Length: 286
Ligand SMILES: C[S@@+](CC[C@H](N)C(=O)[O-])C[C@H]1O[C@@H](n2cnc3c(N)ncnc32)[C@H](O)[C@@H]1O
Image (cartoon, rainbow, N blue to C red; front, side, top):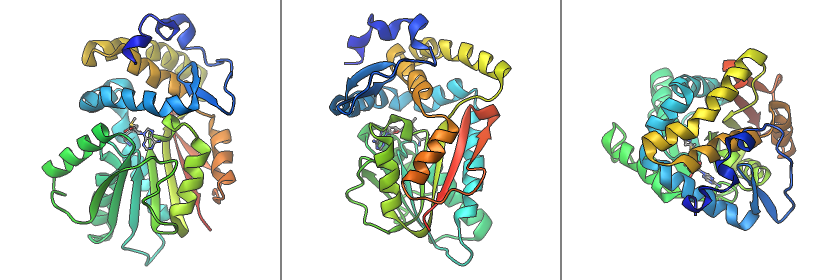
């Protein structure tokens, strides 16, 4: 399907990178990058993107963020310390849209290094079996091989029907939630699965707050599908990734969505990373 989009308006660099794309979505339609598609179709289209990029995911992430995504993830993991109530360890973590496992392994490593916590559990969830397999493969090759504390589940983050209510202490989603068909449903589900006192942490691309950096960033973004073509032989998937970033709500709006799900959001509500190219949002289920 993605390949069928070649030659379509998705290919047009002139139209694809407008940050003011007209919102033509209705309750039965939604966005797929800059296109309006049936909501029922989006999950399949997003699935095709991530199946396509799964094996080259790491290298492309490094190219797309110039390696900075690793620093952002480290900061995200550190920030989540705030979510660990004193004396509350071990914790039950869930990393949604966890794919690569970067956040899952990072959180467990950090828990051990900083709190000598070797008992916390981790559920890694992703809607895409190919992405989840990449995470499982890494797990089988790193120091978490055969660690019974880690489980991988194919699950839609909007629903999480295999995860019980009030069963997790920390919910993370890193560079995943912008791909959900219904982001608010994903946040409501996060609220459902967290225990009272539990913490949601979202790391996501966001809106740049500096004109010079934004000009550079918008121009840099135009090259990403070209890198995608060169490295992964896949122009359209990387164009979708750029467009999905541009579609994602601004920091204040997304903070409002977290509050709407029921979370208390400590002020200022989010932390911009690299001038807002990415941002960390934290919420607490009181
Ligand atoms: C850009 S990757 C991020 C992977 C990892 N969290 C990271 O930070 O490196 C986005 C992931 O979101 C997953 N995803 C997209 N929609 C999803 C949904 N509705 N539920 C769960 N995972 C989803 C994709 O399959 C993909 O693995």
